[in-house]
Image (tube, rainbow, N blue to C red; front, side, top):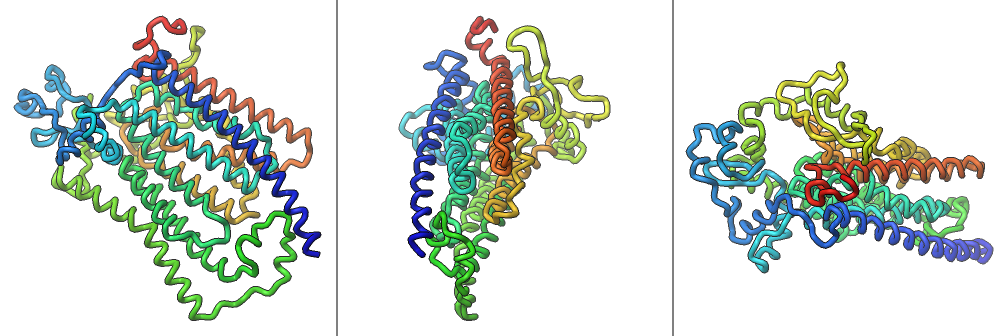
Length: 526
């Protein structure tokens, strides 16, 4: 009887191994294509020469290497003498670092410090600041690499019959869908902080999802997850809400999985053996743990949950201390002290406000592109005219930044709506859906309250949302029994992904500052 049960499992395992190998090959091909396109975009077509827009993280890394939190670049004496140095009309004639925080005669960065901490050892060796374009490229490529691994894990666990070509398409959608190529057209500190936060956020999700079903997550892995999410917050402080939600989901799973391991009638590897009928597993009585054993297990689960939470809590304390050293307050990030195009000190009461949410939601979801008959045909446009009449812009709202809503730029993401289908039948799948949903929604939620919106902020949401769309696409294919309809849905998915990638690449040709036209005039007729 055991032979009859486990022989099909062996066959299924061999077939699954072959399919997994082909899927990994498809993912590698997709990753190679994405990397080539990324190099082409960030270099404005030159490939070997990469334009530099800022080296702020390099300057902060140099400051850290010399034991200080302020930049070693000294502000102009004229700037220090101004009655109101934050007034753009007053500071415009004086050379200064744009968008850098100026406080008590020194320059500071309000962006998260983690990328600079990682760069500090390199700064000690090279003895000069490194351009932020290299950080942007590294983090963006890391996002695609981690997402590729997540795609392979999700397919192997639930969608082993999904066509192999969809894996390569999914990887390309993550790396070339909006707004990732747009980030590379102005690879500066703004994009480095966002991309760094997303990389570490997704890396933590990967380690959480990669853990084996029905087995308690070890303290070492939980500590690693906590470190990743601590670094995500330290790169992009607005991700703190997403990190808190994700940590809660993992902690919940720690305790739930602890109970499951107590009641499992077989060792975990037997539970997961492919081809083993579930009714056979249910026919064996489940062992009932003793009250004392359950108490010890709960204590052990609590200790493991602390391994997850401790790095995140420590990161919060260190960030607060970092702010206190610079600005004398544990809650002051320095954003209002920016030398920006508007005096943020005078409008600090509504830099973050609920009135900013409606125009932001419209922009990130529905704002259309500007269309023309000239190549590249579509571009991300700014200006108050891009908003419909029913959207009232609050006072001082920054409406001039370029942006195209996801409905127009990434129609493939509509498959994210189907991600929850079938999740009820698989508890772990539902947990993964919740993690990706929390990362997407809570990743962008804080910036909706900001007094302005821009294309790069979409990257706070789209990596996780794209993974959700891939999961939803596969779920639809798995639920369709009719081969004809399955083929139609597959063709529709491929078409929507192709359109999304094409629009995203066209938008990048006229990205921030006219990247290609500025650094490679006449190239592609631009």
